[in-house]
Image (cartoon, one colour):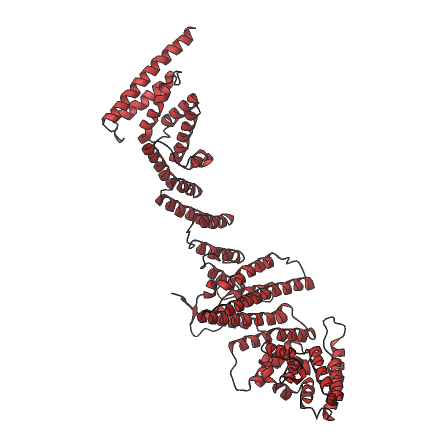
Length: 616
């Protein structure tokens, strides 16, 4: 039940020769990922509302900031997950958390690279600086070793001292490397001369700047001059007596063999790539990356192991194959969150406009629809899915209508929430459906007030009539109305059905009677019968209600009104074809006799009163 058959490749306009089996988006149910879904929703909505009119640098800066916001959410979730893994004692949970940490780490690694290459679109010069920051942030395997050496009493005497210096050099962290080397020079005066020369090289090494203070040509000339000087010292054997310093000098010269000797300190081919570029081609242009990336991966792996899926995704990014990145991530990653949000961001960068899928939707919308559909399977995250569907102009409305009908309306509060969403979007059919479902539930639980309220919202005349009949039946059995507040405040809603109108008006009669406004109550009672608003089955009840008014000291009904009441009583008691006969029992007979007597007495009083008035 948890599996879907999906032709993955056909979705991305690639030839589809087989069908892949994909699990549903199970990550939706991992509690510790709730922060990822909730907080990224706010970022997504902010991006949809952002000023499209911003142009050039302003718009790019805005989009880069959005990308960084997404990455900060991923990192925060990763830290929470790591903390959960450390604190739990359940081995199964610990394994699950550790797996999620690895996945989130890979997601941030990929996203950060896409941010540099696609969103920021870093140019030659700044590109290398961004890639160095990327490696420093994500290659953390050596951090514990660095901490161990730096926290020791005498770092230069530590067995891993030179490893740490090499790590700093490989990551282009020159100031930290020079600081450590100064400790070695202090502890070993014999190497002072070599240290000063090496320190001078490291200090003078030309690097690109973000401020565009120099042209690429100037940088290349400076770097070439620096490189030749460094080469001269190495060939002169200046560092021959110290293999560690000689190795560092070779790395500074971009010697691939020397750099590859430090493979264990770099841990990944993309670290090797960035180090190689730093010391051999610092002005690399974006479109040259593909060649260096492929050769770096080949050199680093050396045929000993095959590339992992993550390697292929990063390689696709270095080759500027955005669609391939998205396709590979869709297959490899365990949820739709990543590809949906990354594709949306790239779409706002105007990078995906030309890529439509064969069934009419574009890739951004397709992935957002898949992600939002996954959210709708969760008992509370479905509310986020509504906003994602809202921003899918082609199929979002259809998907929302289909999914919202499947939400279990477990409580009235949840039903009201769903109803509000439907009403805001003029989804009239869904509004009626929800109201009918809730009205039926309330009626089954004998909550007549709630049932009537829902049927009025649904504008369902037949159901409102049914519930009105139940109210009237309850009144006949108990002698009082339930849910008076609702009935008293029906307003124009009572016009939905004749029976509802009668219910409202009959309640109004009781209210007028209670307020001792007998003349108004009498007129309303008579109107209900003569205008045929009241069902015939209720006439005897209405006539019985007229008895106290007929017995008042003051005459309430006029002669004409009394004749009308008499006619109604006769219509009720005389057997007419098709009408329900009056029950022939002692109680009903007694009621009829009492009504006839009261009506006759009232008529006599009225004639005397009206005659007296005329005579005077």
